[in-house]
Length: 137
Length: 357
Ligand SMILES: [Zn+2]
Image (cartoon, rainbow over all chains, first blue to last red; front, side):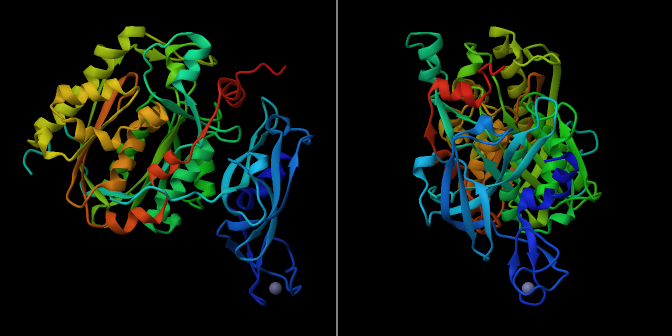
């Protein structure tokens, strides 16, 4: 990803900012020129909640350039609560612990580094939803 | 309120407090006995049980983002009203390029905000918090976000490798009337003390061995705390909780005892045994654990310590707003309970200690 493209996509990468269609009310991610549901243009910016479930997944053992330091890592299709499906890495989990239907939540993590001297790219990933185990006093 | 003008206490013109707070601790834990297995080969007395280690895809920016999201979830304010994002750390991902702009962008605080990174070893976070108090307290801003976060590194085999950990907290400062805990006063106490340092372009820090105890940690922590108590006319018994910077389990326990605090006042905020020394995050993440369980009316004394050296002390009073706010985000103990133990080899990989080229 070029520095310019990284910069242009920062809102969607950092915080899962997509769109909400003015006409059919569907949530859209990633943002695009035309609504994929009703083909109407001009959408409103909309930050997705980041909660969803694992729809399907695989494990990447032979990663693309720039991701070698992270392999093996799980990648999933995540069905967001608002509707859109996104492809993203899962994190804070071993590949053999991933299950279909598992509730996950978005976190912003380091996606890769463009060499020792390049920029650091951050992006959304998903992790198992944090368990609330502490007891309130 | 007498003699505010010439007091050594720092107090803003308008009362301020903590309107939101959030912790972050990574999932991985390296037991101290695992470090001992590799480097000392015997059952030495261990300074902590285990430390939190950042995952391969985590750094001070990503961790700050999550802590800040938790702080904003508790405060329930429009992020566009925040006029400062200040991140204190000694492990900023870039040498040149602010961590704070990444955090401000991720939280949709941009573009009408201050953004800067702070450095003062382990007290960079409380330094940022004091500036946020002043920024809001002067009336220049309604909200200011301060963060203390680190992914600390110790030289392999060094005493610090047992404890140098990852984690921290985000503290959102705002008007006292919206606060979960009001801030009565703060005080800073610094001297030029060479107890711990890292030169430019050097990966691991150096330290003055035994010198880190008496003239550095104990001197600054106890003086900052004592000045606070004297100036406010308080006794240790007036506080329900005290949170001190925690490089290991013994130092804060001993400093608290020297000051006249009892073990039960220290306990709730003493996390180092389970997460390690989170450097700029250390006293602040301890404070979040206290806020998770404190009751309205409780007084809390927080004292940081940063090598080089200095301490910031804060006197807080918890308000009734804490009850509704604390459940809006994961609590500090939720992060501590979330735990995956790793061995030294995995740790070496995660922390970039393997030579790959
Ligand atoms: Zn549509």
